[in-house]
Length: 180
Image 1: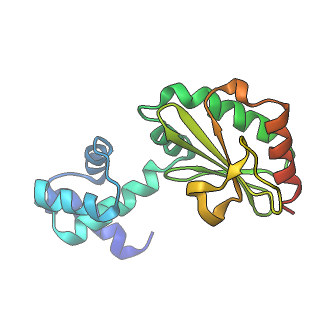
Image 2: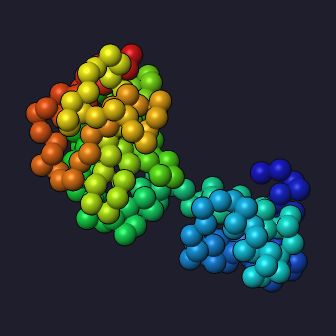
Image 3: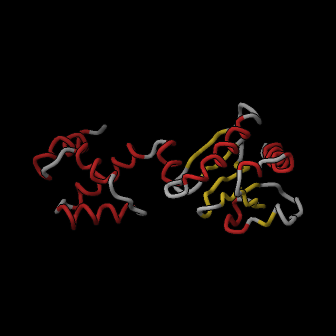
């Protein structure tokens, strides 16, 4: 940690009335879509100066964004979809030791050398599984990429863990095999 940041954190209780840990607890109780929204909240609701607010928000993100937190936040209000997510992740892990699972704010990227799948809770009743399978024709079930745009070539709408059948596993494996 650089000296200026360390000094700022040490001065935080005196200058803002709370320690960094106390500010982080306050921010955890809120849901902000953007960094700037959290900064504005601290400035307007708590009278924190811009420099301190920006630092608090930045440091809170470092602490709050564990992989588990990111996934948990994606499925807030959509907890019934977690078994679908879990079954997809369980299957993907069987494909090889070279699979990397990378949760982001709104989705989870599945990567080999390149991203080959993307899992996103789309609605309260459906998970969208994006797949990258170049030159694969679409079907009623294996649709075009839809909201995934160029990140994926196809999308499968998954509404139940039972949807992870032989056909879907085959498509996931094909996307994995082509991601070298």
